[in-house]
Image 1: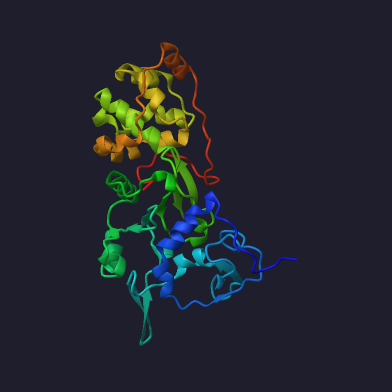
Image 2: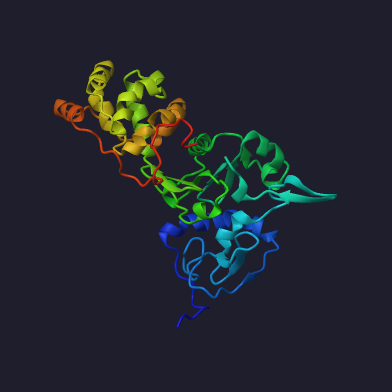
Length: 338
């Protein structure tokens, strides 16, 4: 028999992201009129965590998907992005029905094209498209300077440079797109505790990026005078083609001739092909701030033996080592991460 009301379970490391979001959004819940209740299920219907493990143990909100949807119990953390807030965000629009006008207030779970970063101190910074920024700039978060029109990844780099995300080992949350599908975002909200594994959370789930390796790649390129090539798809095309399983030995051989020390650069770039597909886009943002990011990557890359170069030119990188949307074609799109 399940006993509701047992002592709360200790926080697991993988639940740190939920804990940070819960702490960072307490003001949203203070203004919410949603009634809480004791759940009769074993787990939250959204994140699937046991009720003893969630941030407000054994407290739930009854939620309906649509007017005719079956009622489900979600934890307070997973319910938070669904809360409209007049004071914290502000007015999104007026819904007009006949002669009746109803105010619709902003929700985190409806910020399409917007991102966010939650610091180890549980401070939330939102990045919004210009039109949404104008709507919400007068809300409490806007007045506190927590809103910006920067791209999510640019804001992340800015906070890294400022030291706002230190110590990284304590964990922060990077959300690249809140989107409209709250369940997709909240089902696996992953914290980042190392730049070797930057977890990019979105409505499509969580994916990981080796930002440490990309910063190191930028360092090697700078040492070789290739700063201007960092964000150019044309420069990286042989590497991108190989990451997609479309090896062009002739183009790769020409690439080796154009790079002063190709062995050092090949050693520095991420090993995962999905990270390699993001190289031009991410390097374009990283390179202008390289000097301030290098303290996070102190290890100097050394040139490897000639045998390494030979192995690189004859071995095709693996095509897939990360989960992706089924049926989706992997392409090196500039805006995919941001």
